Image 1 (cartoon, rainbow, N blue to C red):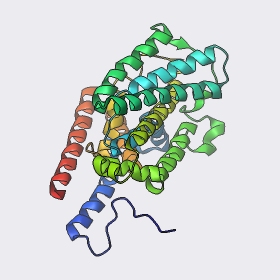
Image 2 (image 1 turned 135 degrees about the vertical axis):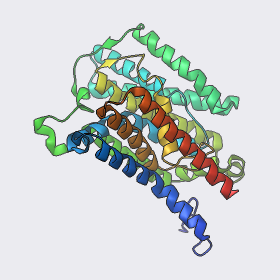
Image 3 (image 1 turned 90 degrees about the vertical axis):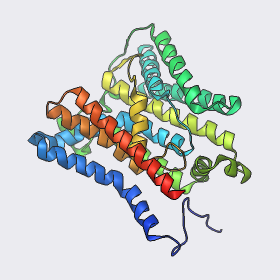
Image 4 (image 1 turned 60 degrees about the vertical axis):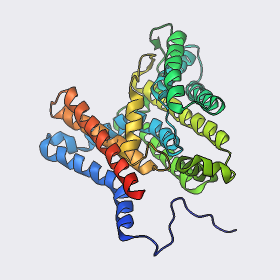
Length: 335
């Protein structure tokens, strides 16, 4: 069977030296940025920053945003955006706690949280494709709808749930668990990252996402079922947000309808810092994970140095603006 061309593939010998350097910069830039930020805090911060215990903590703190960002990467590659991620995470924690409170098995409760998230994504995808409304507006509306639904289910208060093994997913490892190196939630993130990356690189679905994000009309003319792919990607992304809600529940051990306010900004920022383009057609799972780690490292380093939260916010915001500016500069040179 004849191999299909890779996305963005260019015949050897046809690239200009400048384009080669730009491609390498796009790939290695976020990684070098992470290394630079980490070394900066190693030099300026306390000795405890570079310890294995702190690195494991950073990995655990990154898990929630990073899992949700895996789905957001697919959406941004397709040229869309989802502002309802934080609300979906909150809804997932409420559904999980409510099911556990009613005696459900932890696996069933976790599956219920993921299913609730996927259902929200399905609604987003259908509204975007059927009403032909821009994703920003649709998901801005569902952000409020889903948050309101979470508060309604919870009776506008936290839902206490019995303790189960779900609480151990992003908890610090006990003395008898050191062989795992990192928490189970971090291993879940790593496995999902490989799965999503493989789907983007080697499946027809992944190629269709890049095609839609690069030029939707051309993709449609080439036979891509644009509406079907969009509905699927929003459903999958919201399902991953629901799984991020499982990790959030693990951290809180309660269902909280007010949690994860503004998390959607961190999720989107992770993708942008990692090289994803808000114009669509560009993005990578490695870059997204690096972007999420950069933000967590900054917060951890600033916290250990005793810097106030407003300094962390300014630094993180500056990095996001810089990443977007670099993205626009790359597109102008490519035109």
